Image (cartoon, rainbow, N blue to C red):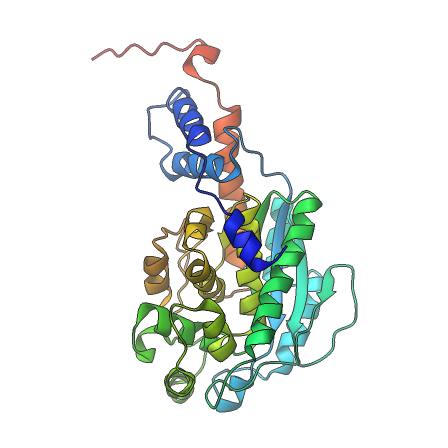
Length: 352
């Protein structure tokens, strides 16, 4: 199914399912509203899935990886080879996202969308390389428009297949040395802010490195002049292959009425592009956390999303989104498994 078809398929949240979930929440053995965000999350997920008793058993963390030509500008504390090395680490179970996914019973699937080096095949790795890294956005476009469309479509097709195999909920993650720079450029364009406001230290760059990053973002926006109303134009000019892939994955997940839990800075940039392409997606997205990366709060404000937690995280990989799996699943279990006053034989009469 094409991206255009998937976008047309996205419907508003199901009001009937939400009303039924809300009614049950108000009958559970607790003061109404006393479980706070857990209650509203369960109602949102009921609306997303069109199911008043949603089950989120099969959890997938989709980690898309790609390299970036802008690393040439000195915007990262790590060399580009680390992208491939960290992908191998994720596959082998040694990364944070791997550990957290194991804890909550989620599967991790890594996709090579555009890593510079080749990686040895693995059952948990898909090779969908559009090209061996993007162009240097500080001097020209990241990719062609055709490549951007291909990357978006690839992400959508991967998720569509996973949904056919039973996926209930998606967590978005990424790996790509230098990818906070294009993400910050996307944020600058869509929030209409200056680079200084959205450029953070990423992998821990120095003051000199931060200034190089700010300059690279400014040059990328000025030279490429992306259209803030055209998500594909944004991706092709200042994006990344993994960011485009995540945007496609988000679109497809919403089209098939599954919840989307986004991670931090890079995943949020992908979500912003997806929402630019299809504003109705916004209701399907759950923000896992507020990243410590500069500019993330402005991005969440643009999306009108309230993150579940703020633990000062800025790792990426999908680590925050996977950590949020447990909270989101708990919200559904409260809705489905907690007894109502009538079921428990508890009096609802007030003594006041």
